[in-house]
Amino acid sequence: MKMRKFWKGFKAGLPLLTALAFALLWASPALAATTADVTVTASPSYISIVATNTTYDFGAVIESGVTNSTTDYFPIVNSCSVQSDQTISVTTGVWSGGVTWTHSDTATAGVDTAGLSANQDGTWGVGDIIVKNASPNFIAENQAATTDYDFGLQLYAPTSFGDGVQKEIVVRISAVIG
Ligand SMILES: [Ca+2]
Image 1 (cartoon, protein in one colour):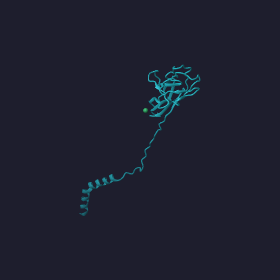
Image 2 (cartoon, protein in one colour):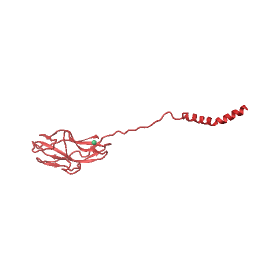
Image 3 (cartoon, rainbow, N blue to C red):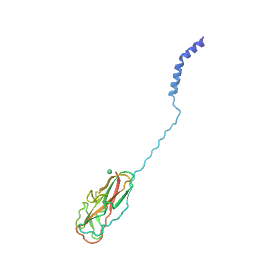
Image 4 (cartoon, rainbow, N blue to C red):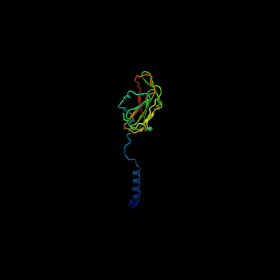
């Protein structure tokens, strides 16, 4: 009698017990990994330019003469991995050799004073860029990564010469990430 009553009660409580068992299972932490790894990587941006033509001779120039190379005479191999800003300048304000020439940052010829301008693979007189010593101008602003370009140089010879000795100056392209 007692046993049957218990059984009846047990049967009645079965759904509740089942639900409780499930609830306990649900709440138990799963048996799984105790660590989680992610891999991170980074590639260094780099700047790399090379001039494949490194000299140009304007030859025998005349007073107040304007002489130029072709506008694609100097190829720049641009291996920069990112966009860059590239400027053109002369590395000094003086053309060396005998009676030196002053380099004009406005490309204005004068007595023993010469100027230079550049053109990026276009037409002389269209978009010429003055080659300065101080505060260089852009030759290739926002140049796309790994995209080569060419430029040429134009000389504004002095209005008068102090001597006939060959003059020399170095033009530099500088690139920075930008
Ligand atoms: Ca830029």
